[in-house]
Amino acid sequence: MNTLAPWIEKQTVPLLSQQGHAWLLQGPSGLGQYTLATALVSAWLCDSELALSQGACGQCGSCHALSVHTHADLFVLMPETILLELGWPLSEKAQSEIDNKTRKPSKEIRIDAMRDAIEFSQRTNARGRGKAVLVFPAERMNHVTANALLKTLEEPPGDVKFVLATEAAHQLLPTIRSRCLIHTMVWPLSSEAVSWLELQGLSVDDAASQLKAAGGRPEQVLKQQELGQTMQWWSKFPRAMMAGDATFCSDLPASEVIDALQKLCHDLLMAQTTMQLRYFNDTDLPAVKVSQAQLTAWFKRLSQAARTSEHPFNAGLMLEALCTEAREVMNSAA
Image (cartoon, rainbow, N blue to C red; front, side, top):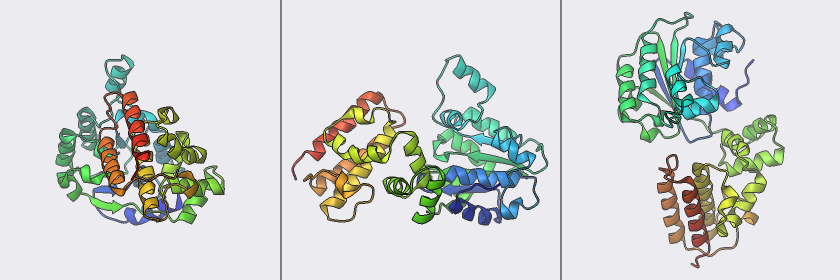
């Protein structure tokens, strides 16, 4: 049974009709790159004769094996932190090293995993429907790992297809991008996104408000819900930052705090120019008088902080610094 979101389903079938060996799905986070990539590999490997024209059946042995993350003809290349988060198994060597606490799960796609993927691509397929390699998020490949993949993309084995999903295509090697069929993710209509979020358990009002807070990205709404960023949280966030209250967001990863601060900075800029707010409601923002130059400079500093948010030297100190800066900017007179 097909349970894809409607905007993902609309993108799946046209992509299945394309001929090639490598696809690159690109766009902002929260638009469903991983979901679409999984839909593609499911259809490529599905036992149904209609899979390539209608999508995976969801009922055959291949679809079941993929749903429980044990498909013999699929290799998933992800950072170990994301493999664990999404329930994919690690290699025996990696699992042993992490269990023995000789190292922590990697936040990058490791060269060892890439070598395993290349070796996998050269093996004979197990089920007779070809093989697939899914890379997500593709921007987590370092220079060495990316070059190893590039060699395989240049001379691909005959029965393997690659799908790379990314939220930062500009960070990929130009030579990798040039060897892929590039697909830019489609933004869902607000009405269909709200309807889909209702099916995920949100009320109509919460779905619409949370969709605004997530910048129109439905999967980001679900992520924010899991992290406790409800509408009540969002409405209180601007004043908490004006007070420099780091405890308000102490349970969030640094990347999510920076994202929320960037949205706050954006809407403060909009308020200064009397334009419609994008992420917050008018009543959420405190009446502050901050110059556009100060807000623009703050946004640039937040963008710089975002580049190192996955590897902070000290997460607690970083959070304190972010909230202190927010307080200083928001309390500075224009």
